[in-house]
Image (cartoon, rainbow, N blue to C red; front, side):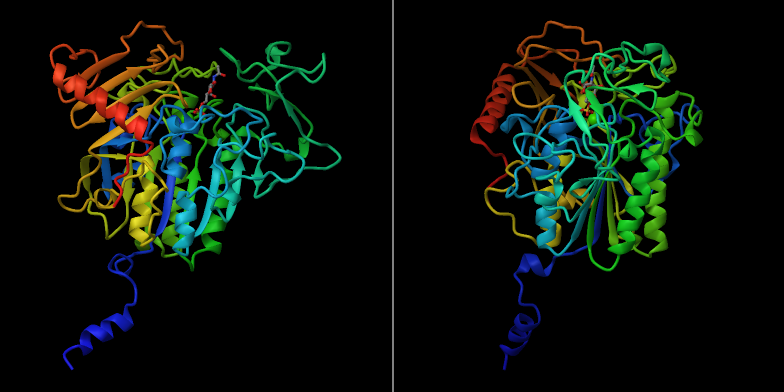
Length: 515
Ligand code: NG6
Ligand code: CA
């Protein structure tokens, strides 16, 4: 008789302890593009320069991290690691993907969406992709664009294939370029398709936004781009309409999936160049198009929250807000960002920005929000976008295969702000792809390792002063968040230990503990 309650419990709850505790909230990851630590109000942007009420509201009612990181200071490696839970330096061809780049994540690799699918989630990515499409030959723009997101765990995708400054300016919906007229096929290439093809060099005086470096190939919407293309005219978008389209597509998809748990990767192109927000946002900040693009991003966040409220999903939805790399001022167009920067400090108190392994390159806004579940507050725990795979698998009760997501840590309790919960004890960040530079943070210590011998440290301009740097340098972030004082000589033991730990993690092929 005394066995009965236990037996009953086993029948009623046949899952393991972990699965029994599983929760399946909807999950939305909103990833901004090139957004810096002090680019939004709740982190330090001054209201006279720009206002971000919607993102600030997430922070005020959620958890705002002061040591929230993306794993790289450019887009492709951060997004690769975010989806696979693997440091991008472990795989070649994970640097900034070109217009005709093939799929970087191979079908069969465990990913954040494939794990969540196993937990019964509907999964979608809407917005910037920049992880390549198609087999080794690259994308077949007029045919089926696969492999792509649908082959690695997403049920649905609506994409900007690479970046808004890389050709072509078309949407990809699932396997196809949307609205492509077969009579006007799309051609994308690296060479000028004909001698009279207009470019940013030959037709510079016709441009609505001039370029400052690169970005002088095919012209679309009065803006010259990286790479060449012809055809696909009916499929081309206007830069000004991108944000509205991401919101429209997301709202439709959320509404259609409101009855199941869902995972939405809302991948904004804002504030990547060319910064060309919708006309209604022009002049809404004091910072020119760079600031206006942040206001537009903030609007998108507000619209998503509004949809969740309308559908009464807010209490059952975890929202994470983050960025794919730190800020940059001039990233190739004369959009006034530098001239109008005034006293705005996009990288916050840190040095460096996009392309850099200084803190400003990867320490970015990072907010978790789940009404009723996450108590409002601020957390100093170290958390990273690479950890979502392990953490969300843990939350939803999915067992992570031993060889999956080798660098993704289960820091779910820290993301939820549970009392005493710890984030990461150490984190490697990198600049761009395999073979570049590393930053290694463990507690207050920060080791810089420059393998490529280039220190890319300009936040505001993208002009890379080739500052000579030692291969290794050590900093104490608790005293020196600007990483100005190399204290390797004063702390030889810590310096040696940090160098060895970093090398060990690189060599061992994984950093997630086997448990
Ligand atoms: C660089 C581009 C820059 C941006 C970056 C990728 C030039 C001179 N610079 O090569 O404008 O597109 O690639 O940015 O062309 S990311 O955020 O997607 O990584
Ligand atoms: Ca980026």
